[in-house]
Length: 272
Image (cartoon, rainbow, N blue to C red; front, side):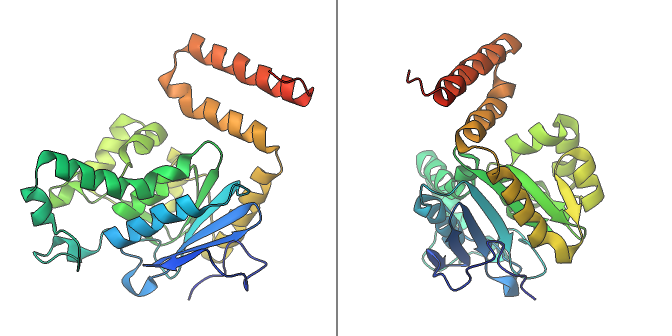
């Protein structure tokens, strides 16, 4: 059974996008992106990735928080197995076709696929994934694309690409290492084992775990808490934290000073 829309309230408002297994609805400062193919456990395809990328482009400037959720028992079972057939998807290059292309063509195609996973970390947004059931491979990486993760107590994360002879290439490796460290990230990827809710919270993969019937409400509550802080302060803080690992200690100190100077001047009404 599909759970209620995490944007709550105004369910009669027409979605900005509803195609290829992706629906985008906006309610003032909160946008909700929903994976809408529960019959296939929200398996992913290039068409779905293009729809996710389009959802990012369609967000109004008023949106501050994006909640990513999924209908059905599974968040996303990963890449649709049709991708591994010689035929692939209708109108799409198969994996065999991709392998036969030039290096530049192959790189460009994968880069296009990655666009569905990159916009969630924009500094002007805070993204929250509400994850239930299976989040495997591309599904795991889509959850990792978000800033924060609220999980149901039945969640099962797994990175299965390596066991298929592939690598995780949908932007998931960087956040995974950042969250759990190199050794645990390597072990998760190489073994393909499941990571449940308790371990996800303990290792930093998830911010909070709740019973399944409370998942959407928990995501809404977290979104409301984020919205309680002034937008410019949230943007500056997110930028500071995102860049912290790439900066030295002294560089981070300087970045903090510069960000605070901007905030103080803004609060005092003094332009730069």
